[in-house]
Image (spheres, rainbow, N blue to C red):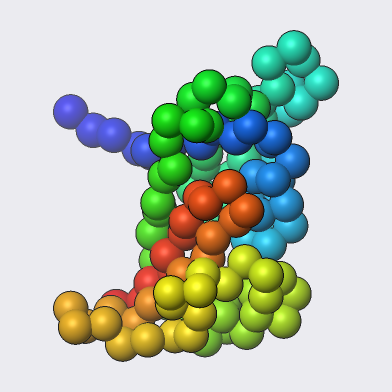
Length: 121
């Protein structure tokens, strides 16, 4: 058995919040667009990673996901995000920090509390 990709679903009350976060801040692009449908959603991707963003207030109220994106150059990612979208820096991990488990990390959070931890081992 072989898997090639994990594609999580992320639910938003307003999908535009997710688009600003993942497209505007983190540089993902839209691979499939159903944003004008009765149940807006889109597939996004970057560097072989993929996610589905859905507009669904009921599911958004039930789940606030947290993801880790691993990089080989955390300083570059941090500088880019801190300069272009400082409002997304998580108040509990606003700076690159060496964690007790040996990874460098900083975190991002959008206005709906979806959290992304940027990590470098």
